[in-house]
Length: 461
Image (cartoon, rainbow, N blue to C red):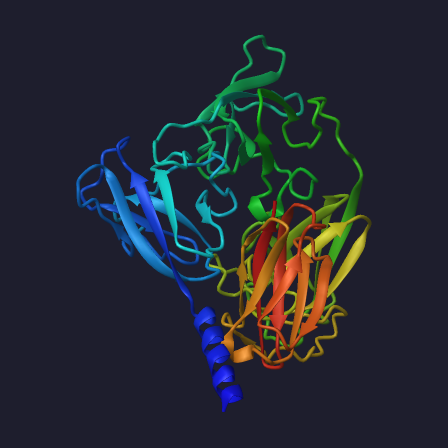
C-alpha cells in the first residue's frame, strides 16, 4: 500500500509539473507617445495572437499599461506592442535596427523560455528594459560608398532601400557631389544595428530597378536576394559596387558562368494550352517569364539558364501562365518542398554546368515520374513545436501528445539543402538539438512519422 501511495504521489507531481503555469506580466511605458483611442495591445509571434486579442490597461492613468497572461512553463514567443487595434499591423511599434528587434521575424521582440513568473518592463518603440524610456544606446554613423561605373545611372538617382529599416526606393538617396561616380550617404543608426538592404537605380515603387545579385554570395535568396548588414557597433564605411559582391568598391566582375538546364517530364499531367513555365524564388521571375519548350514532342519540357558560379535559388514549375500562381505544382508535404518558401523546390549552389531532371508535382530526381511513396503523408502541424526558434547554443523539438512514444524520423537541413542532423526518436517527449557548431543562418527541422510529416524553421545567430 505504501508503494502504491508513493507511486501515486510522484505521478501527481509529474502531472503537475507537465502542466505548470507561470505568469508573464508586461508593463509598457507610453509616456513618449500619444495613445490611440482604441488602446494599447500586445500581439504577435506564435503565442500572443493578432492585434486586438490582448488589450493592456492603465487603471491608475499613469501612462503604464499592463497585462498579465498565464502560459505553460517553457513557453517562448516573439511579440510586439501596438498603439491601436489595427488589423494590418500598421500601428505596431517600429524598432527596426534596434538590438531588441529580430529582423528575421518582422522586427519583433523575443520572450525567452519561461521558468517562473516574470515581469517585462518596456517602452513603446524603445529597447530600454527598465521601463524608463531612457535609451542607453549609442548612435553610430554608417556611410555607404557605391561605385556606379558599371551602370547608366537613372535620372532619378541611386538609392538605398529595403530590409524593413531603409524604407522604399526614393527614401534614402545617395549623392555624387564631386562627380567621380561614387555615390554616398551617411545614415545614423543605434549601435548594434543590423538589417537587410539593397541599392536601386531609380525610385521605383515596385523594386524593379533594384540591383540583381541573384546567385551571388552576398545575396540572401530567402530575403529577396538583398544584402545583409551588421551588427554594426561603431562608425563604419561600406564600400560596394552596384550589382556585384566585391567589398572594396572596385567593381571587380566575376565572369565565370555556368549553364543550368531543367528537363521536366509532364507525362502525369495534361499540359495547359498556354504552356509549361519555370518561375519563383526571386530569380526566375513570375508566371509567364520563363517558358519551357518541348521541341520533339516527347513530353519533356526544357529550359536553360546562364547563371554565375555558385548560383542558388528556390524555383517551381507551372502548368499554364497563371498570374495568381494557381497552376503551380503542388509539392506540399513532399521532401523536395520548402514549406517556408511556398513549398517551392530549392537549387543548391551550382558550381558547374548541370542538368536537373524532374517530374511535375513529384520529387523523383531522375525524371522518371515514379512515385517515391510519400505522397499520402498528412501535413500535421501538431507533430511538434520548436523552442526557442532563435537558437543560442540549442533548440528543442517538443513532440505533440499524439506522437509521444511513436517512432519519429528527424532531420535538420541548412537553407542550402545540406543535411546537418539526422536521428530517430521514439522514447522521448523532447529531442534537444545542440547548435553550438552550426553556422549562423536559417535551418529547417522536419519530423516524419509513418503517416504524417511537418517542417519548421529556426535561426542560429
